[in-house]
Length: 431
Image 1 (tube, rainbow, N blue to C red):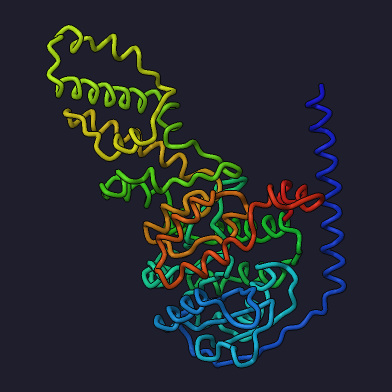
Image 2: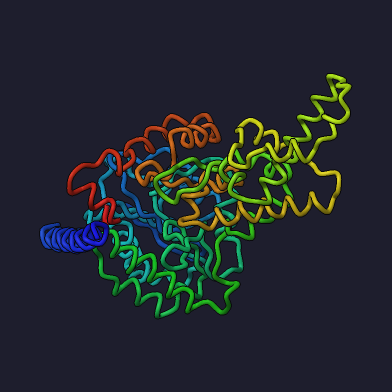
């Protein structure tokens, strides 16, 4: 009964907080002085276009500059829209073709809308071969960035993103979506941007923007094969199946975050699966018997008492270091059984891969596989532990590590460090 009362109170509290932040958004919409100042402007002669939404003050981040440099190497026309202001001497005149500063309202989709309005007002869609929409809510790693940018532009897939998200509604992450020129020319796509209603309320932006955009793009592509992400489940399955080193060390690339999109520890994964625990127990038993043999035990009966030894093993007691050796060294003598074991393990890894936002859940593994963008809210969303972040940092080019740590640790876990109304708003997904 107490639980029911608590749930009812929490439900009404959620409504009140939604209304409160909705009113704040309306107030901000009214009070915010709307402006769109074009600081850099060049003519577009045709080709590839990148729309980059920014939230950067005084000067651009070094990792953002890396993205812009890579875009220029690929002859991409860059439209950058910033909701903060850069110092005049720091305007990216050589790296952007159009640089716009606007009011800070509407989050990333507010900047997308401003950039797309400029795109259509200037008639860019007529000569646009491909359009990439991306924002700086991610850290741009040097590792894999050249291939990433090239793959987003040099593709025949009509709509392609970096990663997917199956939570609530299957969609592409709106922080990075590349569309073919014919999609950019489509009147429905144009109408979406011109009629998009901006808001500062996060759930509304996700619903109207991220979900709405993916829903529209799905309806515009010619087939299901033309709506997908670069780093999807199929990619990860092939990587785990073909890259033996990656497969054997995947336990290391599983994040440890326990608050959001929780996953079991590697020892818990073994203990909870009857197939893995069976293989693990056989592995441990085999090691014990080998140790006994090494000591030249004369007690043959004791040595052969497999059933007795096996029955004393507990699947709930899995040692971490033994588990590490198990994944790295385990190889069954029978090829068929070894294949079945590997298939089972990969299937469990893939189940985890699809849980929630894939770029968050699989941040370590994906960066290791070549995805050069890392969400900057990994700590704020309580997705990663400090150990996860340190492991991510160590994957980066040494020149980027300090900046990465500064950015990612600027906002720590909201569920621990926010207080009062802000914490409730965070728990309800509004912040």
